[in-house]
Image (tube, rainbow, N blue to C red; front, side):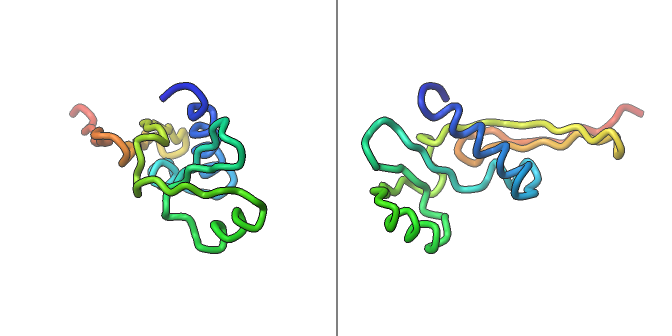
Length: 107
């Protein structure tokens, strides 16, 4: 991802983890929006609650729906380390073709 969307996708991912208490896979799976430099138009994945979409309309935004997991919203992978549990957690974006695969510790 690059351009307008990169900072937006990163901010949405961090907000999902920090503000909405999602784990990193939930944050990666969550619907995204993208605001480019086209007036009041907001590109948005259709998985947002109806209340959110209605609120955007009331505020004058023109909602343009993308596909469920649109590649236009960027894609990513994430790893989180928990020092207390001594565990790494992985997440992979459903908008791409990767996957988070656990690794067995050496014996």
